[in-house]
Image 1 (tube, rainbow, N blue to C red):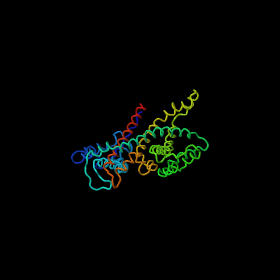
Image 2 (cartoon, one colour; image 1 turned 45 degrees about the horizontal axis):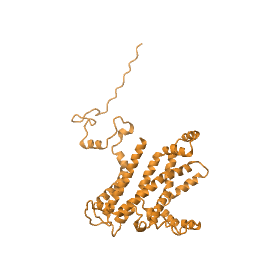
Image 3 (cartoon, rainbow, N blue to C red; image 1 turned 90 degrees about the vertical axis):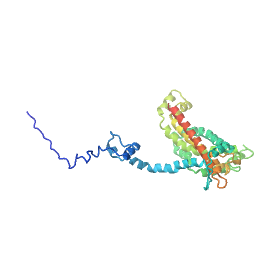
Image 4 (cartoon, one colour; image 1 turned 90 degrees about the horizontal axis):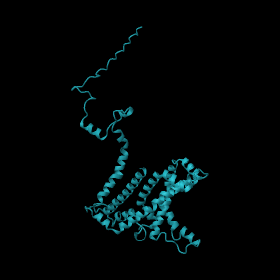
Length: 346
């Protein structure tokens, strides 16, 4: 039995369809102009196998969304940095005015300046003391408050409260605590533990150590949050299996907890190291506007303020050179942390 033949209706093409423009090339086959080829090279469009909305997306649309961030980073980041590098080769004054190019004179002066090396020593000591403690202590604190116990939310909030306080307010509070007639010295004298007040705010080494303690106290709660998030990703089954095998709390900490949060430890160490090299407020609040007796506790940011921003005797060019040195030191620390992270991952 023969099947009936079904004919397909021919739909007439719209007027002008398939017609070629003068010159014999259709709009789709015409080669792009030099401007469009350059734009495609800089900002290539979607690939040939892309589908959906990607085929109809304009090449400039992602750049439009990123434009505010790019402009902000350029105006407030890239331009000030480049301007600082340029100023470091001049003898510019803090309040502006005429200036002259001095080449590498500011850098030669910096390398022969004992005050610069003293400030560098203080900044490095600050980082060497604060970074290991800031990596370890918040982790121990996070382990303590990780457990879901009654009232544990209060302790988490109490440990985080110093983070919310202003550095100036915290510095004033520590001034009151550590002064000769402050709470600490008064309590120690009443307990007959000391005869004379401890010079927390007048001895150069004690000022530096007190500032380090202030930094640690203020940052514990902040990095505790980092570790609480990381501890949530450590499998509880590993701790249970290790406990069944007879591993104590210390062994479980070193062999399970530490490897599980190692990436967070690297991040905390990097952030703390950068912050330690930039410390200013703690030294200013505890050591005064001179940075301790005779400026003995000045860090690099403190020294930059003294030599570069003083309206009467400051040299903005020399201060910019010290700023470039601080940037190089911070960059070296960051690259070292990244290298250690990559070696750990390998």
